[in-house]
Length: 428
Image (tube, rainbow, N blue to C red):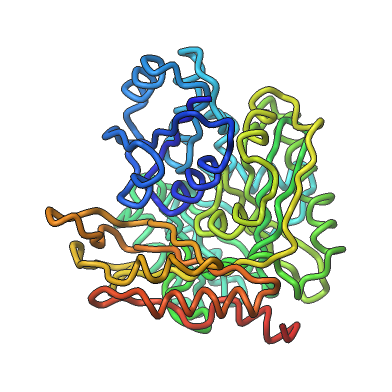
């Protein structure tokens, strides 16, 4: 089969890497890709928003499957455009992708179908939102309604922080039109867990659970990012809770989308909070693979990823069971200094070959390019996802950080506590 992957980040590198292992894949393209992806697939200089140009390319090359990585094109209807041209696409259509594209839609869907989530209210007026917040206990969570590159969420610990967040989001429109409405919801405490699930209408095939680290600084301090690292599985969260999350949240959500006339076909990402009482509740849903969760989940999938994609697209997921490795994986993000604020590009990256040579190490490029001398250089905030594998989380963590220490570029930053939460609680 000939396959085209849409996107340019670490998630897409992981997707391309997994697809490149399939004996069924004869040709791989990625649009626009990055310098690391270019070592596995032919990169095509088409931006993710150029739907018609992507459709023209896919038709001209007789592409058998298009895999859409990022959230923005899904929310904007890329699947509808490509399918209208007769192309097979892995990813939800525009109506289904609204589960991520609008937090207001998502919260109202959950409320209507009695799926557990945080108490909330929605507002299109900053004054009304602030008035409501002053009547609620702190901390409180403020979310831009639309997509904001993973950064449109503020946990306000003071009323001043809440006012500042509303000003940034709704008045100064820091996240553009995404901030025209906000969701204000109760702050949930507990352990976060992510479950990626392949969904074909009402059929759900969950992946192994993972845990992301959103804040920039160690100890989960500082502003949110797109994700500074992750690990899989989550040994400190009992299997019974993971099963409950699938049965009480993911499967009912898939059925709810069918009931709403928006059947979901693709990868549904459930961001969950496990309360101190051990009950899973929805924090958010994404309509695509998570980044950097994909970088630790796919290396543990024994099943041919192309088989899974085809089953979802063809409506035969109920005939497929997923096979998983017993190993663990830990991903540490190497970021440019200053991220998630302003940062420099163009710094030469050293040590990649040495780091990648270890059999237990994978390096996924997120924001990289090549300079005129052919050297890898930084080209984004999150530059690399450095993954270690092992037979348990501690071994995977040690492999990841051993590789991190071999890589360097000017002003490189990474968190040193990725996966510590699991190790503190289970001891291995």
